[in-house]
Image (cartoon, rainbow, N blue to C red; front, side, top):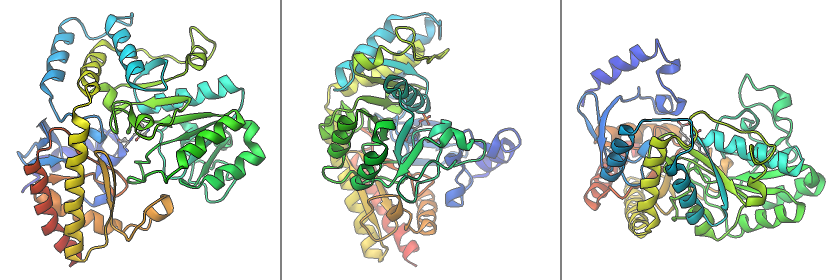
Length: 429
Ligand code: KE4
């Protein structure tokens, strides 16, 4: 395989775009590989500028649960584009999208469209603070909710760890009310709530953490968060930007049977176009301007093109047929990855739920950021590069998920497993 054109384009891009990419994780820095430049994609395959073809397990970081260039989504986009791409004036399709989200997501009675998961989380936090009149927010180490200032805090080491900025450019004052605690540790939450519960506007959590690799909630964990929030009058926010419409038509809240007060959505909801959303009980959502006094806005929010793609995606997903299939496909893939690692003597812990998974190059169990951080990132980087050479594209970071789509056939999965058997032998040395 040669990557001459990708390398040439990357070198040039570095002169015009910070790091040559429009989002850091694409840079490939974490796996010692300069990024591919993709020419086109179809089904479960992506093709780069040099003509190399890969089975894709990133799927644009989650949106493409039906695979690339899904015919119904492409057709909907073409049709919508011919009617104009944006008006900044309400459209029928925005209403249809809102009704679809309300129909599919158990806890949502009203929903507001935005343009990214970051905007969804940022707006949900503001709404929670405005609605409760409180300032503090609890989040969890290793969970990511986009790059809004108040959520970019260093992982909290101990309890009552008030936010320390996770990046230059975020003043201490902005994160002083953000507390970050270990995931899967309800005692840590209880301790903070006992001393500051009346000041906590919300607890925001990824119901399945998928930004430190994939870490599942331990039995009863989400129920405890739900009970604690109810007891202290804080809002429970499920960040379902990844799990929404992925674990079930109604996302993680349907899968686990837990009702949050607010839900953040993104990725799948846009069918591959830039869409985010936040929603919840009518009583809370009606506080959002212009029906209420809590401000939030967006020029392209509810953009008819993005709504057409997203609504087509949700129409297909709401039929519910694909979930059992992609869950089964993912368990076939994960069993193959585990077998490949075992026969090569490589320590690998695979966490999976539904069509979401992650292989940590460490001995398990991986239940929080601390245990995830024990992974051998160099081993992962070598695995990534060996798989790439064999025509398989996994996430260019140990701490990201892989996604199986409805477009992955068993022969694609078996080709991936075959490649993994060879790649693991190289990793195992
Ligand atoms: P965006 O602003 O990137 O659309 O969404 C932010 C976000 C919010 N909440 C969760 C649970 C998320 O996973 C994300 C974004 N996910 C990362 C990948 N893990 C996006 C990839 C990237 O940053 O390029």
